[in-house]
Picture 1: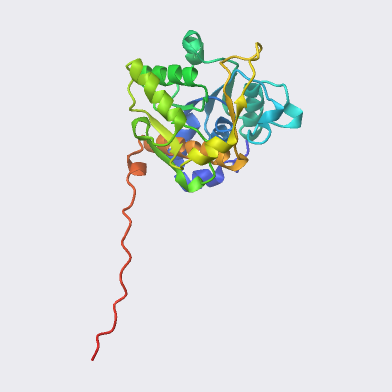
Picture 2: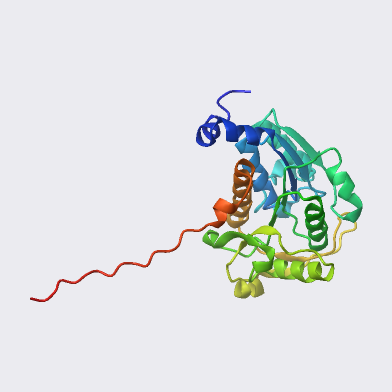
Amino acid sequence: MSDDRFARTQLFLGNEKFEKLRKARVLVVGLGAVGSYAVEGLARAGIGHLRLVDFDTVQATNINRQLYALDSTLGQLKCDVAAARVRDIHPDCDVQPRNLFVDADTMNALFDGFSPDFAIDAIDALNPKIELMKTLRDRGIPALSSMGAALRTDPSQIVLGKLEDVKGDPLAKMLRKFMRRRGISLDFTCVYSTENIADVRHRCLGEEEKADPTRRGRPRHTLGSLPTLTGIFGLTIANYAIQWLVEGSWSSLEKRPKRLKPRRHQTAKKA
């Protein structure tokens, strides 16, 4: 591998921190609009070990927002397309594609032979997301979970916070409801948007998807989305994950500078 491949990352982080990325083992579950860009950021940062999980194939409807969706990849497994792209970026990366639908029955297979230092939950289905979050919590694996990225337009409102504190996100609201019923802690770090989507949700909520026996999961409403915001969500998650891997915590990220009040211009005293 060329010594120049990650030279700028190494220059920015220093040898010791870059070595942490090279040795890091990261699990990414969900390789769609958010997950695909998260993987891109991790691969280009030099992460040394990736397990990439998705049960689905590339569809034409994915092309507007998913990195792996191309005319040439239609019908292929997302996990295989993702792994091939990672190898093209970072040939020395130990990348492991897994074609799995995440539920209680597949959790052991999800972690079989792989002990992640960090995990990214980019699942958009409710029950699989809850199962994964619960398992990550039970196993003590540091993780980030993505909340809804569809229907948003303002990248400046994408923030890091606790699930229990998320406002205005329908997915987060449903997660909290069902997790409380099961006694699962809401102390889970996630990336979400503070943007108010009430009006746009009413306008851009599509019809419920038709049931397809060849695909897993229950039918859901189609949500309108831009290619930009979903990608920014994924790269934001990758950015936080990289910083956690080199620093070991988010404490420095959670300390936001206080806004300074603008100074009033002093007026000249009258003589």
